[in-house]
Image 1 (tube, helix red, strand yellow):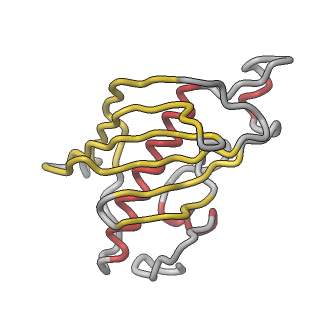
Image 2 (cartoon, helix red, strand yellow):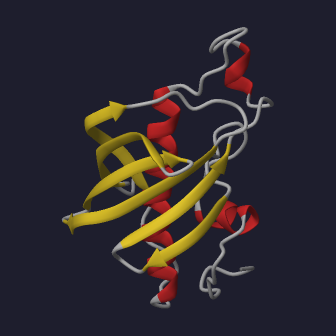
Length: 157
């Protein structure tokens, strides 16, 4: 994927993800895309390790991934759905989307070092530069978090 219109194939590696999203360490929270139905849904993975910088303070002696970062991982997965779908159509990529709203966030179980977070995101609607996504995260087949995400396309200055 050396140019902006390169073909995307599954699985999408972290190196390819870095060409699709602007996020970098320590804030890139998606390691691989494993499933995709263009313009419809995507499944991505995040391998959670004790080396994550947030575990130093959340919580010493009892490391738990902050819920807000699980939501961010789902939002990044939504961004990958729009970016990859755009590339598959031969476009140079969709506009950069910013997280604008989170609704109905639920956290059902803690995410801890050694877990593999599976993010499943579906596009509910895309109109006028706004995308509405339904997202959930699972660990070992058990839902640990879910929410609805609204993302807005970046307005060019």
